[in-house]
Image (cartoon, rainbow, N blue to C red; front, side, top):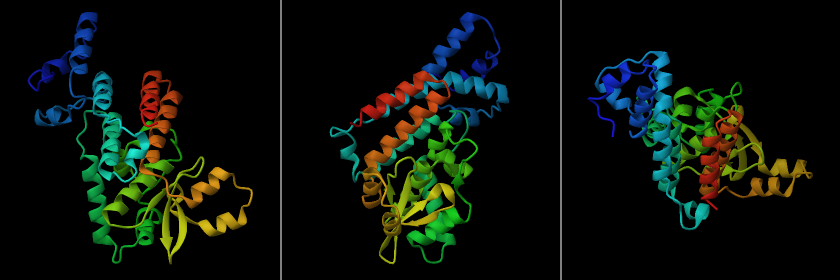
Length: 278
């Protein structure tokens, strides 16, 4: 295991082109935890942009190993996560840890969601699902990453919270997690091709397009005005998406994102994790 004392010497060897040195570096970093951010901070090591890229790449095998070892395959697959919020958040946290660069300090996922929740409580006079929607999305605090829609980091909820950008699924999930902490009725809507959240206003169901400024879509009006909707779309409008299926969509999104980035090893990893939920 990589020790804090070794780190300054290893950093000095990053530019050594000797094959034996590079092989030793790969092996040493691969045997780490995959995250050396605390060690770098403790030693006040400020990596150059080039070295940041090199070290993060060297840490990637260790992050793959950590994700695989911490992945808890439920006995009943995705169904077992239906109401298990702790396990749901655990899996989202280890996905975020994998997607992290392993070198920059940041809070854990649970702390990040707690901080957003506390900020909402301080700034919203009367918290409801709708006022939280307005605060998070109509305000522009969080919005869709239209420029880099397939960026893997869009599925890293810590990155999303820090940058205010995400994809439909990650933004909706952040909304759901904050709502759960505030004991609000916010659920997922597994609409084909574009994940949405669901809230109730005056006892009527409305879908929330978190990617597009928190736009409200009346469930009743959508079904009445669009008779041509597929059965899958109609079911999505009517039924809450279980937590296990939300997690499954994260995995499929990442499989596709890594395929787009020509990272077959990581695409295969997330395909296997998705299959573990069946």
